[in-house]
Image (tube, rainbow, N blue to C red):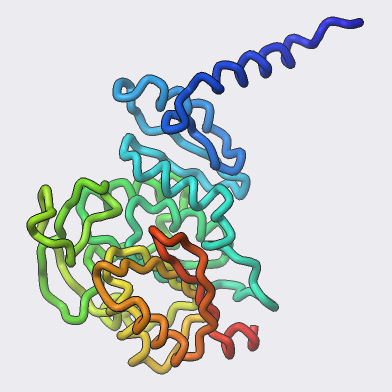
Length: 279
């Protein structure tokens, strides 16, 4: 009987070592992205040496994962088993050069994946937090797609102006205009813009929204416009509004609504039937 190959021995040893790692210290669900082993090492030595790690997805998108633990959670959604929630198979022919609206762009991980998924696309990234915008710009530059993106340093709101973006202990993706002040651990004053101001005369084909309550005014303002995006992926935060009313409005606008989230984090994929069938 021949001896096992050295590579097989190393793999077996690595699996045994990983079995000893607590589940919350494992980097998993990243769709086989290159760089995940470096990310795993960073998790094992946390909280020291928490330098950014670049993951390269199968699509070629490069995701700069900072020490902010939210980045890894978002990468898990975009690259792992939930990838189809963000990038579903398009019924019929996809738009050749879709215009994408990203409400709550955060650090730009969705943006760079979307620009890679739709090669001829352009995107508007709406993000009010100053620190997040720095990371957003870094991810766009890393992927060489700064010229295909427009950053709106503001929060979507019913009217232009300014407000307090409240920071919470849930992490940077929990920053919200609508959080109770008693639960905030900090904040920053940010600019507010309406949907018309953000779009500046353009009409999105694809919308992604994960913005801690902004989804309610997004759907309300979209309902007041004559055009309908073909595809929307919207994360809904029931603490900040009436989720049933939002879904009813979407259906009245001609959208087929499919749940894709969880009970704790509800999310919905919305195809506009007429726009979808026309494609």
